[in-house]
Image 1 (cartoon, rainbow, N blue to C red):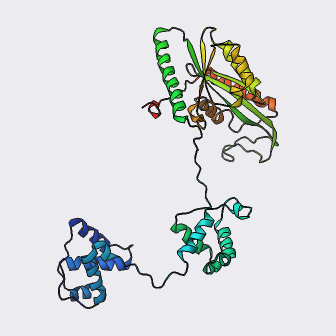
Image 2 (image 1 turned 90 degrees about the horizontal axis):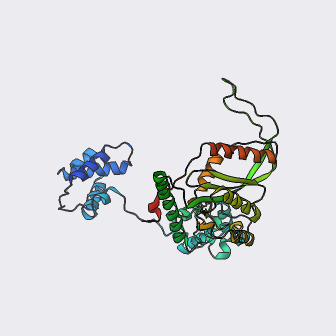
Image 3 (image 1 turned 60 degrees about the vertical axis):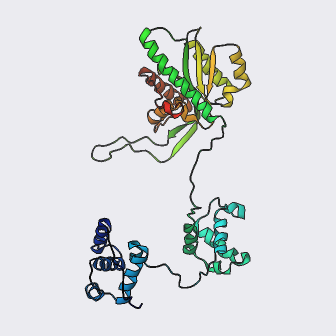
Length: 379
C-alpha cells in the first residue's frame, strides 16, 4: 500500500484508550490484535510511522492498513482482519438447504428405524443420497462438514427440548377459578380462626397417584458399618409384586389427608373416596372438590352417585396439563420423598399397609398446604 501524504489524527476517547492499553498488554489475545493495538496507541500519541515500525516490529504496509481501517471504519475495524473469501464456496447454498431440510425431518420418515438423527447417521445419509439429489460435492462430506452446516443454522437434531402444550382452550379461565378457590380458602381459614364458627363449605383437593410399585428384595439389605460401609447395601436385583394406586384428598383447611389404596382407580374406587368424605364432614356442609377431568371423576357411575347427594359436592376442575395447580400434588410429593422413597416390601398387601401407615403418620402431624402466588392469575 502506498503511503498517503496526509492522514487525519486519530482521536481516542478515555474508554477506547483504556481498552487498547489493556489489549496491548494482554498475554492471551491474538498476537495480531495486540500488535494493532500498539500501532493505534502510538499513532494516536503522534508517533511517526517510522518510529512505530521500529518499536512494534511490523512492516510499514501493515501499519498503513491498520491506521487506514481505523480512520475509515473505527477502532474495532482497525483491530480485525477484513473478511475475504479466497475462492468461491464448493458447497452451494442449495446444497446446504438440502442438508438442513434432511436434518429437520425425522429419520423414520425417510425409511430409517431411528427416531432422531445422530451426526454420523445424518452424514452417512447425505453421502448416500447426495449425487441423486444433484449435490455431488456432498458425496464425500464427513461429520465435520455436516456439523458446520447445522451449526451455521443453529440446528441440533440429535437433541430434544420438551415443552408443555396447552390443549385446554379455557386454561386461563380454569386456572383463575382454581386460584379464586384457594384465596377463598385462605380467607375462610382466617375467619374461622377469629370467630370459631363451623365452615359451611369444606374444600378438598383430590387426585390419584397410580403405579406405585411393590418391589421386593432378592437378598437382605446390609446395614451401614462405621468406618467401613457408610451407606445401606442393597442387591441390584429385585422382585415385582404389582402396583397400587393412591386415591387421595387433602383438606385445605386442616391438612387432614383422606386416602384409599387400591389396585385400580376406576369409578367405583373414586366413589368410595367420595363416600368417605361424605361421612367425615357435617351433613349440612358443602364439599368443594378441586380435581382434574379424569374419566373416573365424570363417569356415568360417578354422576349417578352425585345425583343421590344433591348439593353435597361441588366440582372445581383444574385445566388440562395443569396438575401443578392441584395442591394434593404437594402431599404426593411429600409421600414420594418420605415413606415411599426406596421402599421394599414382601407383597402388594404389605405395600398397601405401609402406605396406610405413612398416611397415618402424616395425619398425626398435618400440614396445611397454602397457595401463595395469587398474582399468577389474579392480577
